[in-house]
Image (cartoon, rainbow, N blue to C red; front, side, top):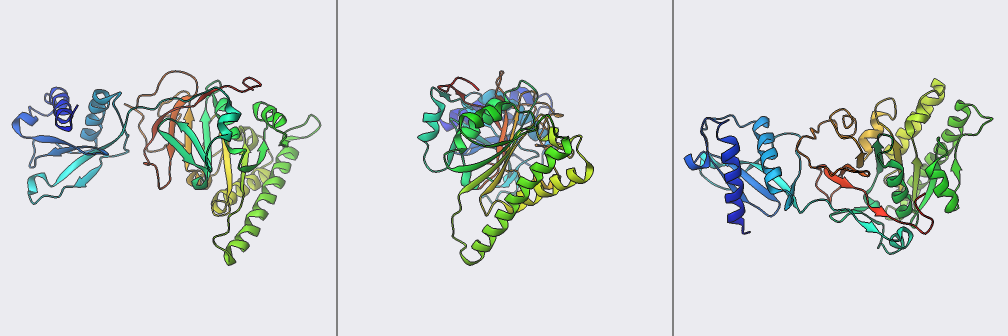
Amino acid sequence: MTDSQLALYILQSLNMALGSQMQGETSYTNSFDVKMAEEGFYFIPRLPAGYIIDDALYQKIFLIANAALYPRYTLLKQTSAYFIPLNTDDIHTQRALFFPWLKGISERFVISDLNLWAGTQLGHQIPVMKNLTIDFDKVTSIAIAGNSGSGKSYALTYFLTMIKPFSDLIIIDPKFDTPSRWARVNGIKVIHPEMNRSKSDFVSEINEALSQSLSLINQRQEVLYDHPEHEFPHLTIVIDEVLAISEGANKAIKDSFFSLLSQIALLGRATKVHLLLVSQRFDFNTIPVSVREQLNVLIQIGNINTKTIQFLFPDLNPEGIVIPIGKGTGLIQVIDNEHPFQVLPLLIPTYYTDKGIL
């Protein structure tokens, strides 16, 4: 299909769906036009217009075009109307609503041997889907959220296996569950609760480990002061079920936990110290807002609605985003200088290991 044929197809879809809502204003009456670009398409209204060009119109066009273009293109959901200027002297058509897209749809990897797959990746690359790869050198912190049974632990195991070849790991597992079993197989120490210890004692041990990591950050910052190009090995602090740690602990110890998390999140990027946080939900009771603001890989798995995404994606209305049914599916946003900031449908890779699924 050529660009002109695709533009005509989108115009026809908009005319049929919007015509009755816009008092007969259609492309046939020269009220608007559509033009193609490599990164998306432009909806060009001719002003003055008999309809209001606002966020509601933008979202309506998104819903219509997203369904019409699926599965050839995935429209990237915007939080509000995306206006851009056009290079023309005609005041009637000097602006457009832009709808960015990615060619194709999200596709899941199927990996026959996860450890072999991890060992064949170049650099510090983590393939997530066939149209999305994360460069861990550009990651500050990662959050994985999802309801019970949604595939959080499965996703965490994938990330742990991909990160292990190039990063030291500190694993904190308050449930003594999947991360602990993975760590035992891979010979990595885990901080976990024990029968003869109180909750506050357990969180105090976590705080000690976080404090040591913060001291490492400070030492690395001193090195960077004199040698700003120095490359440090990655250190990733993995905390499963963060909510289980922050709930029920002594207030002073909990406050210390939040303070240490905040400092590591704020200072760790330049020194290659990262957080990988997993929880059934993230809110201000789970992690401080300052940590949320430093997260640049955001993953929500399982049930997707305005309530479940309100902390990780506070400005997003998920309506119209096509999310496949099944475990390990949801939404992902990668905030760096290589990826569009928009949220994408997520399909966690299906993988197998020589020891089975942990």
